[in-house]
Image (tube, rainbow, N blue to C red; front, side, top):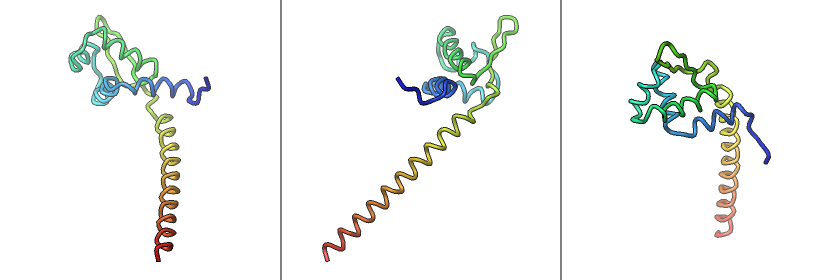
Length: 117
């Protein structure tokens, strides 16, 4: 199978494909949090939250630090610049194609109104 995205983008988009993980990113944008507090906030088991955090860590979106028995999560430093650039490039592509389609439709309407005269 042909791979179109680079591995870091694959990991990021896979991590962000889940609503809970996007919610975790939103929550950590407000401040660091322990895995336990995140599990409580999202009403899930500690094991379930750890799995979500592991996916986010593999993508580099979250980092954790263990102090004593508490593992604290915070946003990773790499951010989403590469992902945003990829999305923007494709948004422009779609925009250009829709603009071209709009022009074709306008031309067809003009031709249709000319024929009915």
